[in-house]
Image 1 (tube, rainbow over the protein chains, first blue to last red):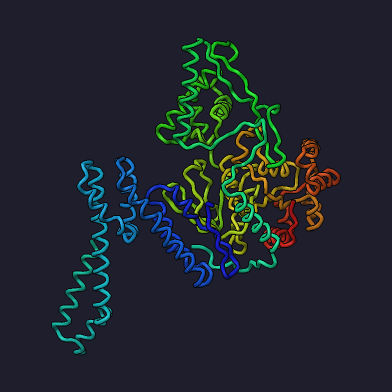
Image 2 (tube, each protein chain N blue to C red):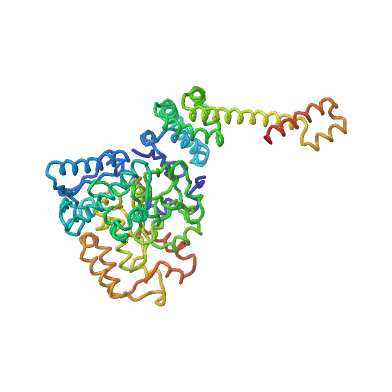
Amino acid sequence: MDFNVYRLSDDRIIQIASKEKMKKWTGEVPLVYINYIRDSHLKNYGSKKDQKEISDYLDEAMEEIAVPKLIAALESHNDDEVMAVLTRIEELSRKDPDLVKITLSNVERKQHHPNKDISKLAEKIQKNYDRAMKRRQIKKQLEDNEKIGGTDAELDQKLIRGDISENEYLRLKKERIEAYQELQE
Amino acid sequence: MATKSNQSYDIKKYHKVRKLYEDGLRRIQETHGQALQLPKGVAKIDDLTTDEAKERLHQIVDGLITQIMLTGRPILKVPNRSSSNIIWDEKNDMLLMGQKTTSKSLLSLSSATDMTRIAKVMEIVNDLLEQNLHATKRDLYYMDVKGFGGEQKNSDALIEDLATILRSTRNSTHIIASAMGNCVGRLRIRDGNDILDLSRMGSQGWQVNPALDNVEILETDAEFVLVIEKNAAMVRLAEARFWERFPCILMAGRGQGDMASRMFLRRLSKMGLPVFLLVDADPYGSYIASVYMRGSKRLSYESPFMATPDLHLLGVLAKDLDEYNIPKEARLRLTAQDKKRAKELLKEDFIKANKKWGDDLKLMLKSEEKAEIQAFTSRGFKFLVDEYIPHKLETGDWI
């Protein structure tokens, strides 16, 4: 069957591409599709029970099809196929870096590939991913910083009122300036 | 994002639509893995992948070369696409191409031009397949205007000839028709590298991509498909965001629908979704319905890939004009051409086998009246969307 049919508790019927259908897709497509459904639609699928059932199915499809397919495409001996998949992974590394994580060990090996186009693209993916992770870390630090000091104006007020020491103010302010600079790059 | 719930859509109220959907899902489950059983004497056509199409094309050319070497008189057998070679498959309710062929010889004065042009089309198709590119019929014509005698109809016919020689769909040759149909509603597809949510693509939605080998249906929470003949009516439904109130997919075919739209519709129907058609209340509307249901005579060889036999004619039926109080001034007189077409349709086996349809055509002939879908506007801008279609779906009043 090309589609899995789910009868939801709110009386709706939904059809989702089956694993059989996904098997016919190229390289990265099942991975992109599964994450698309998970991110954009799953929360609207009936009850929590319905959502769990579909989520379990998506997990299975991810493990049995999406990941092996992506890895197989990356390990292909056909440079054109590898390039096509890497190009899509590079796109994903900019838009949704979490999706790329499972491919990183394979991508890393491709950085030493004799085909310069492949190795350069693999380096770019790694760079995009590292950058995204670094930005995420900085954002987290900034959030922690703001939990202590509040907004910039509130931080200033805290210093004036003596709620924080000058050293603490300087430390928080410096951390913020560095974070803003990093995020602007 | 998918619509959160069916909002005003009440499954109990529209239980007849749900029943069709459940029947469709059951039928798909029962026939899963079974190939379409065609009757004897019908040409078998395949929808080929790029590599398969290339291989089949090379086999034909190799055959011609062998003939040249052995006999010096190569002959190409071209399937006959005339009416005499079209068979109505009653069981599957489709028009199909028979197995009659016409022999064209390269050394005959009467067919040398055709053979030369077919060879040119083969060369172009081979290039497209090698590069995995698609071209329109117009592109093909401009690749050798002089060779095709300065008329596109010559190259158009040759594309269909080549597709039948290859025993393949025309899309398999990577020659596509320009896109005309558009689709909007509760459907998620992949078009090339992009995942598209057709409920979030503005009022005109997604223009059906004629390169359907690049398109994949991914997910739907629709309960039915509504095909609309006229773009004006589609605009009315799209502006009302009809698919948010009724879980559906809307498709504007603009007339009888181009090949890609009909192929895409067939794919949707293969998901078990009931398909309804809304056309003008005139004999041409019935003709359009027949083309969607069982294919056109000209493209009978593609019917197994384009026909949607389970389609239901929702309206506008001749009887609806009185039932929904369409004012006399919003109705039109049947022309001589309309009457001729209606009488021809009444002679068709598939109309004879469908009493309700035949009765409606007879009523049309008796009243000598027809009306466009837009005639409902005479009862208010929202009558079509708020009254007519919901009532038809609720009462199951379709053919």
